Length: 300
Image (tube, rainbow, N blue to C red; front, side, top):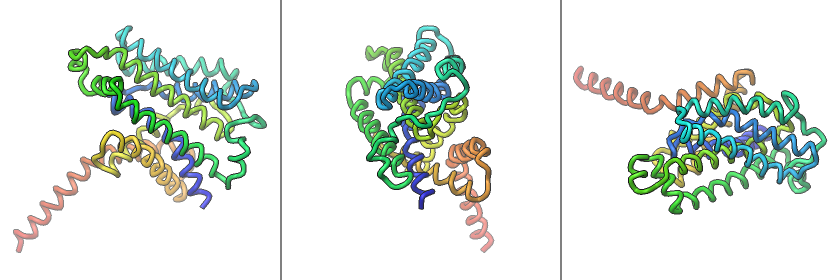
């Protein structure tokens, strides 16, 4: 039972990254590689200031701001510097590696004995692993609701139009460069917040904790879309969270089969590849079934 609760808690916390990446990957149509640097950046800033006596809640805000600044840099490199999308993200991601080392003063930093969000008296009174469920559920619910409200505003609609058809958006007087920068700042700010919360949940921040997180975040998005099918935009935001939880259960099942935790990135890549190929595989299976049935009928 404790493993199930732990998987749900981790799924909810990691869903924050999935929702954030949904903004750029699905709505803005921007393959943002910055996230692999932004996630540990948010964690590094948060853990560094907590060890210096800063409130964990304020530390989370600083983690969000740090992520937003990284997103701003990527947006400026792409829109003003005319650097290709992928390269702009990779440049900022690479720069974040050195920045994170500077912030932490080393390759990792521990929160052992420090006050974190999870040190709250109410959370400590909950059964084991329910603290991460509570924090993850509240955080992802607030973020999802705020994004739903944002996307219904004129600014949000301009943001959606920029992702759908930039040329049409510009013809309507929308500043697509500003929309792109805003989306990258918002997305990476939320990812920085995710890094802040997950580092406090784990009790440490590490320079390598961002490796492969884009695959994990994408898995949440793709699994949610594959499992729940055609949905409205708001429903798809909720499906990302459910997809993240399903992904954690799949990982739990795989680990129970005897695989090592060292294989997690490989397993994540395989799961994501299978989900991405599912429409093609489904069509081939249906076609094979039709051909088989036709062959049986002709034989009769």
